[in-house]
Length: 160
Image (cartoon, one colour):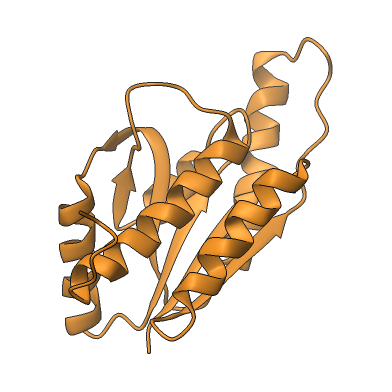
């Protein structure tokens, strides 16, 4: 069974976000080993300088990479990534599974994004949309898309 993890900066603050992620986590039982790993968010000044942003990205990036399971194929969730349809994401996950990638990590940065180090470590840079979403909503949307991908690959009716 595949190991799928979302490795992200910060904790979900509102109960409805945690409940939504918990629901998709529950739905994924039996199809994969799914986990969400949260790393600490770096504190930033009210008006951060360019160097403090860079420093924050580097610190959070190191935390993220150290939390990624060893040997996992990494999807870096970033605005400059390519967009995939749900069907193409499902195919990508299936191809990774067939190629022997038993572990996949989707990495979501903090409000300033991901460090270059994280992006360089990624096998795929993935963008959800040209639109901007709160990171908490993006996490829920990613949980849903992972669930949808497994439904597509398993011939389920959910994705229709």
